[in-house]
Length: 358
Image (cartoon, rainbow, N blue to C red; front, side, top):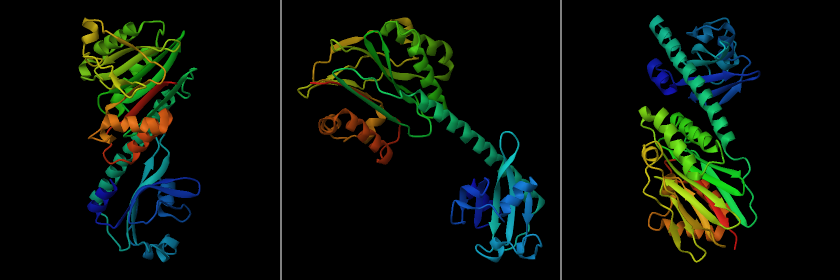
């Protein structure tokens, strides 16, 4: 928006500023050289106080601004046009403004355009605030403390590519069993995040249900309520009985769940089941696969975003080397580091690791 305003008004400086008690904070700016400035004596403070469009064609010849430090000193402003931005409650909280060191004349149609741009900025700021709130709620839904099981090391983490993630992981205890879920809703943004939260809530309901019954209920929910959205979810839902190491797994089109054996061999827990929400679990019950975590074995599952940052020539070896050298906690942290630093990362990355200690 700032770049668009710069081109439309032919000015070298544009700012979207929010005002607090002492400062003006520039959410975005061009040509002003910094993201904050004092509120005192600022043109934007005056615009907020007036709560209307303010146009100063030549500040050096205007009594109100001729002695202003932003006019007599850096950046030696001459032209200013600003329109207030409002909070959802209607109070003015900032401005969209265009500025120049040369005088300008602003026509009525240009003033209308400035007001339209300010409305779009205001709408976008409100949307960003809503998304920020949603991200806070989404983070709160992540397990705050990982479960502790005698004889096991458990680690997990997630990195959203954007503000909101379509991935999620979860742990829940019921009886003597630990249920582990990793799900990936198709796409990125608000829609997939809402679907992921729906899946999480459904799987956490009635924990006494069997694994197959819990997943079948999610299938029915997505099929009944979200069929028109063409949204689907790949997922791994597993149940571990720590005393025996028995691990029951349902793979719903995810195909990224493995057991790495103590001898270094890999066992794929892949199934041919379709993703959740594609009707398969409604027509025919899903079948689980069962294996046993022996001492030294590691259960690992991830979202497909991890594949983007692994060694393309040897992804399994890459994972094995990191696990051997860093352990479960270090391996998860390395995955999150790559998610935030590797240019190849284009999707959310979520990883869950459960190791039965040797």
